[in-house]
Length: 265
Image (cartoon, rainbow, N blue to C red):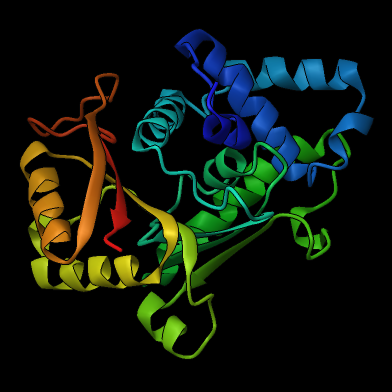
């Protein structure tokens, strides 16, 4: 395995084994990594079985995880590879089904991940906070500490109802991020707003950082990539998620396309 892939813990995962990979990464995340080795193996086994049979982390998240592995590996770009901390920005996060998955994915090798999940809508952020708290509750059955009580040297997750551009101007979030994630971007409905979002994202990436987007529709995805290129983004890889779950609207499916983008240097 190449050094970059090994450093980030990227592996070739089959769908059958993906649930266990996700469970172990989530467990390490909620344990703050250093607590994981001290847990009762029989309890962890029971929790793993519960996780596998639960609908709470269904196929959508497992398939998103698989796509993240694929596009990051093929991009040949490994954010934060020479750092012990990754700053992660989840823009327009909505109710943030992926709120625990992203820091678990990027923190698999023990890297500290500080995630900011931001959306303008208070109601959506309230849902995101509740969902994350419910996920944390599942893992606290093993006696893990509350992630919000972990030291600043460990994982941290913040959900903020505000404008990321406004927050950045006043120094309330980091000036640069190793990873910026936008799930189900919505360029089709408001091009001017999304142009502003993409421009902000590209300008806030570190030199080795990655912007990762997912889309519901084929045409919207291609339009988004064209706009990002116009703004100075370098599309490293874009993949169709053939396992994406079809929705009732024709041609629409969950994380139908996933792309990894860097900024031109």
